[in-house]
Image 1 (cartoon, rainbow, N blue to C red):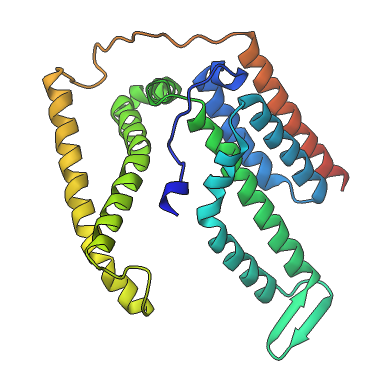
Image 2: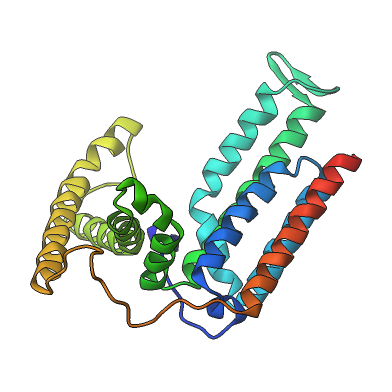
Length: 267
């Protein structure tokens, strides 16, 4: 299950999405998130789905990777959908048994929630799938550069966010290795009562924390040996440049956003 988590991974390529300016990709992702949650009708979700699947097709990233990114959280999605189905009582009652009551509003809310979260994960994953950590750091720093006038540590925050995102796959791989080692020693991690499973996590969490602190110390030492001193006087090997395709992608995203707003007003 841990191997299915693809958050924070970067897959090099030459697709249109790979060649977009990372600053524009961050802005488009933010608009995309807003787009999904303001669409409160079937047509709004349809428009959001068209945008998401169109972006996935343009990225040329295998569909199995998006399925893998959704698979680990699928049980939580089903659990949340069942809660919405049972506890939301708007609309006509379709089924009732003792204290359990299923209504049209509950079904509608559950379906909307499932579709929104699936589209959100698939669409937002494209940002890290098609953008290298270095480019993402530079883009975040430039987008937040106006905050430098307020003495805000923009570069340090951008670097910290990107390093944290980059180390998610590493920590997942480390966790999987520790679990395999514990199972080889006879530990029963996936069996027993809930209390026993929680207790069995202790031999996994302690080595994971130790390994994480060791990696952080090694990274800090490596940055210090390379005379890293923050963003002051820092130069970049590759300068971010925007072009016509970046503005075209932003215009298309805004058009989809306008279409959802128009649908909401008409309905």
